[in-house]
Structure formats: C-alpha cells, structure tokens
Length: 326
Image (tube, rainbow, N blue to C red):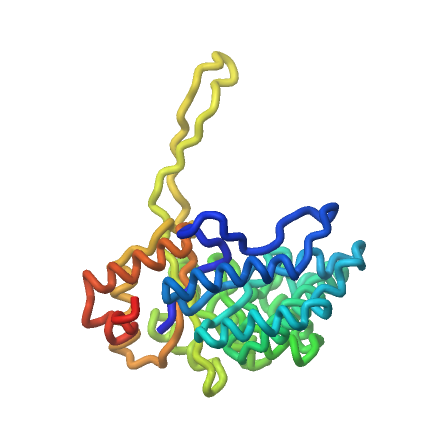
C-alpha cells in the first residue's frame, strides 16, 4: 500500500508545486517541471511513493484568450519524459484531481467545453510523463441541476464525447452531499470508468445505507485488472474556528467561536480511525489499494500516520506497508 498527499509540500520549506506567476510574467510548464523535480527528490528521501500533481502544472494552457500558452505541453516533450522517467524509477504513483471549476455535466456549453479542454490537457500531461494506467485524473459528477438522474445521464453523454486518450485517464469520485457511491456505481455500469472511494464522503452522504465494506468493495472492483485501485481518506476536523472581529456599534473586540463542519478535513489523520479502516479492509479480504490522504498537514500528516501505525498497530502496519523502509 502506498500513501500519498496532494500538491503542497510542508516538510521542506521552499518547494513549489507549480509555476504560479501571473500571465504577465510568462509562466511556463518548464518551470513547473523544474519545481517538480525538486519535489520528487524530497519524496524519494522520505520514501513517499504517491503524489497528486497540481492541476495548474501547465499555467493557462487551456485559457481561451491566451493562445500563446497553448503549446506548452508540446514544447516540453523532453522535460516531461525526463521527469516521468524519474517518477517511474522511484515507483511513484502520480495523479491529478480535476479543478473544482471543471464540471463535465454542466448545461452550460461554454463551461462544458472548457472542462473538456482542461481534462484533455491533464491527460496529455500524464501521457507526456509516460505514466501507466494507474495515473488517473479524479473528478466529480458535477451539479444536480434539479434532477439527479438526468445529471448522471448528462455526465455519461459528455464522458463518451471525450477523446479515448482522455477517457482512459479518468476516475470518478462520489461527494459529501450530492452524489453517492450508488450514483457513481450507476455511471460505472454505463461507462466502465473506475471509481474512487472516499471514506469521509461516504460517512457524510450515504442514502443507500451501504456498509463501508460494501461501498469499498464496489469501488475497488470497478478498476481494470492489473491496475491497483486508489481510495481517499481523511478525518473530519474537530477544531473550533475562532474569528476575531469588532462589534458594529461599540467597536469592542469580539471572539466568535464556530464549530467545525463534519465535511471539513482535519490537519492530521486520526490514527485509531484509520487503523479500524485497515482492519475492516483486511477482515473483508478486499483487494489491495493505495490511499491518498486528503489532509491539511499534507506530507507531515503522512509521515505522522506512518509513525502511528508503527507505534499503535505494528502487526497491521506490516500487512499493508513495508515499515522497514519508512
């Protein structure tokens, strides 16, 4: 089992996930790839074998009003191959998560075209990095638009309209309040798209009342033979939000306390919750899978979780991880 984290590295200050300069400063994929090389070096030293790339790796590459940025992927063929070779040599699993603005089932044709262009570009990047079929682009169904069933049908139609090279890179994730594991399972039946199980989302939104084992098994079995599934895991935040503001009349300082929402990701993974999850998977004899940790503390949370597994459940950890290497 590989553990991964998303985009930003916190364990070594100064590492950048992509070229974030504004368009006026001519950002470029080549700069992002130089940054990515540094991140891959850090991942190698920490023995982290899974990483979610920034969806902005190629800045403005699909912006309709900035055609001068559209050729970046072709301009970086050599650099992409070199960085991809480094990742493959380290056994590193790479992925993308589509931007929140990417909504494939939208009724707005302009947004749909923009989404398709973004997905096509991300797929080309993974192809340029010469990644295998486990390197996927995770996306959500999109909006309900007043009719959940019609929204799922619309997703299927738009999915089939994408180029085959893009479709084979996509994986579908359920969410925390609109589309459930049952919804994405229906779409899988229509398309064959692999499904990403998200533990927190399933706990927040599960209208079918599927058990963890049943939902997880359903998603894991949706992946092609020979391709290891991936799942998302996060713990719900329990931290109180403290907001400082002034009274509108007296101008006195006030501290407003707001409880967390159950859908919010915590900074770190609750170790006992994760241990229970692994035990559930083992006892059910589920297929092997990798875990993308969606946590605010990023790589620091991953490293802490490995320590917690070693300390609290060493026998279990040995079943899932090569703890001699961490």
